[in-house]
Image (tube, rainbow, N blue to C red; front, side):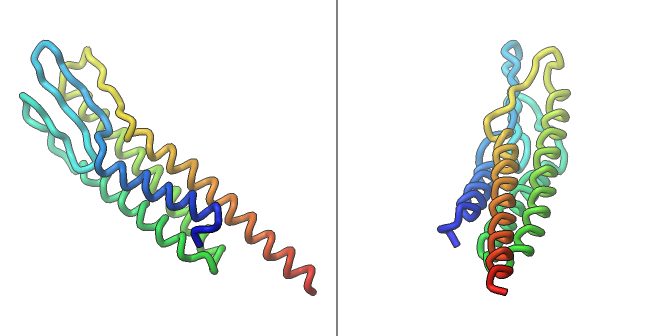
Length: 156
């Protein structure tokens, strides 16, 4: 299980997506009016202004779902084809998480001084790291499947 390199990649992927829940994704501050707006996985937090409304919790749901799928995928080591299917599902969840974060950061951009640009925080890039880890895990799962098939063919 954890001895295999793809399990390590999947564990790191799960940790990346879980850490997205705790860290801010995007931040914008206006030094003149002292207004600040921060996007987290569960919603906007605002200082000296009303927080924009919207279903930002979608980011948290997608990130958590991706983490759960990756953790479940680790324990499906006997079913490599099932692991590959879960990897494809996880790919879609990670891309959806990244897209939702980008969308809500854009919505937050228009709520504060349009001339200033907001800064993407490091947590915004965690889905990219998770995507790379998912692709590496799928590559090594495929390699294991090919190794098992070639060993089986040699025995025949």
